[in-house]
Image (cartoon, rainbow, N blue to C red; front, side, top):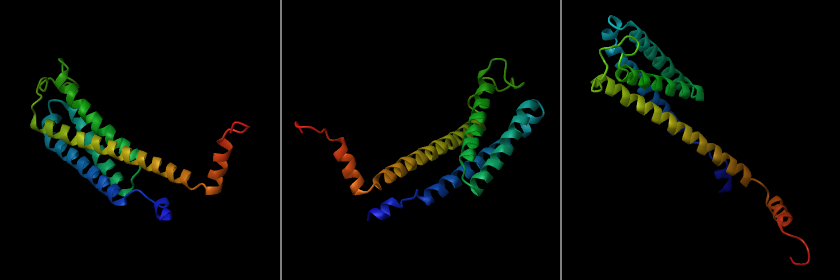
Length: 168
């Protein structure tokens, strides 16, 4: 029984599901920005360039998550989501506008913007769940490694920790 516990591995199904969900959320983020892109290229070209960057990054990072689960891909996914969230907040929150976008100041009810914020929140939540899972796996691995000590070694360690002398 203990051999089976010692060979425990993180659930590969959960890892695959997280990768798929992350890739789908990144694809949704790219689609939302593609839909909104034509309105930004003419009047606010810097915002349009930012959109192109988000679209390209989301597609590449989604492909990286599918191809190989690496912590850098998850970190990049969180960074893209945070950058897009920051851009949304800055274009609406700064009085003078941000990157030449004066038309969106105070426009907090934009349906595409709210959809993008929702998808970006899902991406950040997925990254946090992946980090939590990795942290728990490390704790479990350390616990299993500590439990592999032989009974003789545990007994020896225990006897050495007991105080010696006549009052024992």
